[in-house]
Length: 243
Image (cartoon, rainbow, N blue to C red; front, side):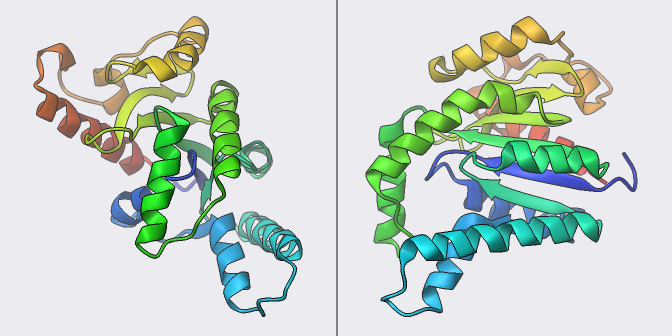
């Protein structure tokens, strides 16, 4: 994997914590700092801020999409590493381009247990000065994100499925790494259908093999706090392998 360019996809419904994950975890990793960060909402917000109030919003959205695609194509052409944040749209296309350009693809799929939580998180964000998303759009994106997840996992070299519903922030549930499944934490009910699909398709690999540990780890004996800490170690370890 050394010297091979990569794409990191951060996906999840609105309010899942994608931007927080990028700012608090990815930006703290020096090996990930030199990358092109591409986010449709960021492009749209920038265009909206710099145009008059009378500008047609649909036209702005088209321009934001064109600008985002231009940045993606340019990054591939210039062999720049990419961090792509999305609610689910565009993952198939960017994964296909990555394979064509010999880039590795790493997926960080952040999930919430229900759309109501997604709506509440967006409302909280707006109260603190963040951007709003219409409720019907949040509901639609949540359903699409959940339905697409099993298929999206198959497009990536490494995929980490993460739950961010509770106080245990960014808890990895399972990892698909180069054709093997590693279960990290007990799978919540709302992700069971996705978990069943991958269990039927992929052989299992232990934590020791996945993380290159010296000895096996028995997560069943850990306290809740230890499991949360171990989850963060898993994420940091896998991101540390991207060099």
